[in-house]
Image 1 (cartoon, rainbow, N blue to C red):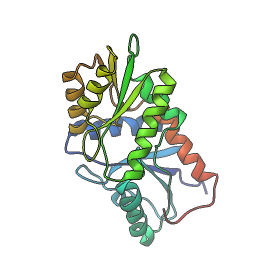
Image 2 (image 1 turned 60 degrees about the vertical axis):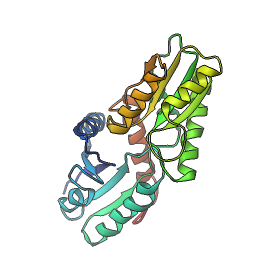
Image 3 (image 1 turned 45 degrees about the vertical axis):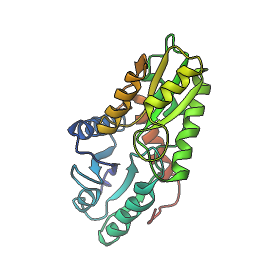
Length: 241
């Protein structure tokens, strides 16, 4: 009997902004095109549907599923929400494994971030992120900003749209005060939404001359997701995150 295809469930944060779900669906389609041997589904922890458990519950008995958290830091959703999904799925006749989150800064992720930003003529860059109250997760974003600046050969700063830390406008102003004249805003966002919009607005009002689009369904992100899944498939089957 032919074995069922592996199901790859992309698990996004979810947003009230419909553009976020549209972007996640587009990413799921891109992964499915790149890996036609996989059954790829999008799911959401909040706001939009379906929930990850709904997707898992709809799979036939004996299926194997890999959850891929579409998260750039290992903060609350990666450390609490995703393990809860796996625990709740333990009663289903489905083998479930979760990959690592997409961040922090892997070469593929940095390539995706930098490709979205028009860098011609820039002399500094701000990496704008959604923000988190988790100190360790926030440090990984700061480290990503340093790595991005090194990759681009530019002075860099980090900003957050929520929680502790400097806002995008403040970071742009600080770089300009230090002598930069053409500051760009790179986006550490997977999809558009209110926090992304707030960062763009603040950066532009402070004088940023270029802003990047969210990562969306870029080829580097597709490859990064595939590499996360392959890492799980090549290792022992995990039953909990």
